[in-house]
Length: 231
Image (cartoon, rainbow, N blue to C red; front, side):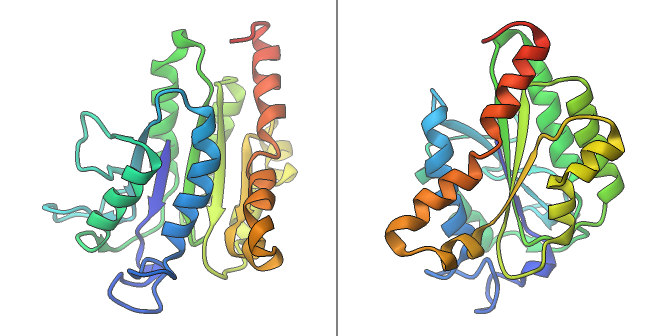
């Protein structure tokens, strides 16, 4: 599952300095392609529910903190990462960027989908692409804690785009949140541009893959070990 940040802190898509600006420098496009191509290898049907948050969707008048990227609330799945990219390109200029930045609604929606698939022995990953601002930290921590406490088969990967310090994303990924909530860590944070800058072109994807997948095997095994059953 995927979620894309359409809040005003990213800058409007028509602004050349925007993280969503159309063109080669669009960091969201770069991240969807790079991270999506890593994660898609672990998905058998190559269909991905993708959502937006923090913006006003086309043909609506109010901000939504969780809306289907393809505009289809009854079936938000998009076939292949290439189609996710094309859907994003098609929608980004039609979405009004607003705010505030709430993570909890997207995480809650993903949690409910995981619960609905409980009898299918599937492991789920929620990929969140964001510029790093967050205005519902308490609620987000509560949602993450509930997923961990219920031992749901789910991990959250947060990819930070842009050059913010991402202090809150680091907190969500940190052991201090797990200690504070009394539950295991299910969040992995990766700063996209830092990986790209520090790597040579032919090594960047390799380094990104290592960081994106770093904690997933442990989280996966721990989840099913706690359940006393492997999928």
